Length: 178
Image (cartoon, rainbow, N blue to C red):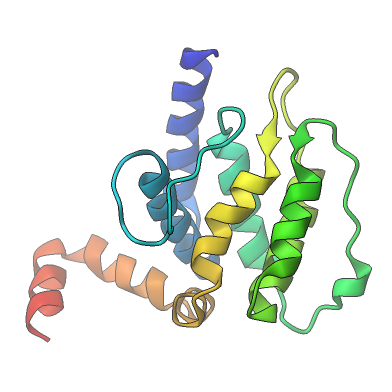
């Protein structure tokens, strides 16, 4: 494993996350960040059990896929039009598809199918890969929760993050006392 590449990649991914302007994408990236923490660091109760990717995850590609998914997703879009690009660097696509199509509610499955379509189209650097099943399970951990998904799509998570960034002490006081 090329540790230097993955450390630099993680830095670029979190820089990318912090620069996103789209409110839905920002909320989704925050949720994805929390689930990734649960996979590798601390139990936050999104996952029934910790999961690990088959190969190290390219966090920047994953974050780009999440951001594009949530900034472009439209509930009215027709899922029959989905076309997955053949990309040999995207691993575990059949397992991801099986997982995604088994999800309920249907809205969670639909948004993850859109995510799969986007990730399979992303240019991945030579010698790298992305575990699509792992990535779908990360996003799936929060899109299956209607309240979380509604807060992402409405921009409520991004609004809360903006309030925190503007005045962390006031945000904390409001969180505790209101």
